[in-house]
Image (cartoon, rainbow, N blue to C red; front, side, top):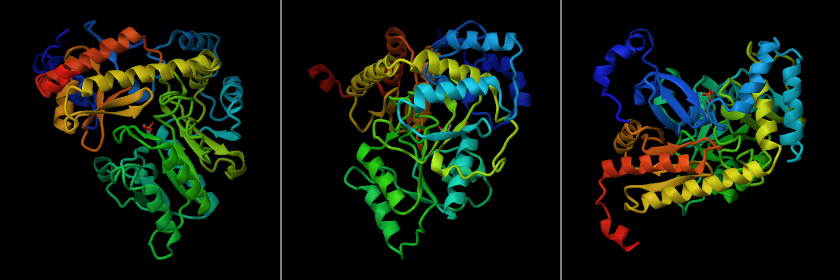
Length: 439
Ligand SMILES: *Cc1c(COP(=O)(O)O)cnc(C)c1O
């Protein structure tokens, strides 16, 4: 499955090179033209199959074109169901809301109202920030190092990444950046630092409207916040009259066990943002879940033409019905997450911790290769051998595996074999050989 080298294929990319903006990014890591996708695989135009561990950056938690969702969508289209409904009441939205209440909110005793913002994660984050500022009358928001919350101005001001921030071309204000859990090493409790800053009237940090946090940082490099830290941050936010916003856009919808990523920690965020895999089919859809008492929006105060993507409502409902009505789904995903962990541990054990270490949670895990250059070589080698996997982290040094939650064990192994060999071919298989022999 050796992919031709790029120069031979220049002709094939002519239209993209000529007409598509330089802003394109993922395409640069995987230079083929894709034609088809099914389950765990993407297929290039020439028929080459790739195992997909990128999965639309966690937008395809049930794999590509899952049959149960596809047939629900095909039926809906066939009977001329409404495609675009602004935010009118319609049956597709009604069925989604019913299913979301019965299958997700009800069993978890979560009393949220649902806002449909524009269909991107960034738009959900914009809405969440605006609402928190409106409710509290405070401009400042606390966001964390390595957080990623989107690239529209309000969301971008909460995003840490300098490359993205620099593109704003203007000051990004009203956000105080604080160290995420573990940022200063395991000895420093950065939640205590937050508490300290907010309790000191002379710290220079004003009481915020909100604290926005990912429980596992996706783009930031798979940093995992501990349960105790998350609970402390939630308590501190509330003590100072700030709202807790959990950005569950990447870590939610089962990616890190449980439907929501904060279930294990027992959090009750005031606002939750969701997008990526909520439609289940890769269709654009975003949600803002708002504690019922905090729904202080006036009609149309935050709007958008594409708030009602009915096709996404149909597939989102089908996904909840098919996968989430039974508890067995979350259990099966957790088991697969354990399997992923043990394989990554096994791979990294061959190297010393300064070269490779496993990190992440649930089905959102990867390998920190400590160097963006090495990680880049690894994903390019993996791609040549039939695996699509991307990097994350401040220096793109973390290879991030986001296999579909429904992946079979054999395919998970196959993908990880390719990754293991790619790392071996880049780092060399003889490193730390003594330790390998002993184990
Ligand atoms: C992807 C992502 C966003 C932004 O979503 P878009 O749909 O790309 O605007 C926000 N927050 C997190 C945690 C994300 O992973």
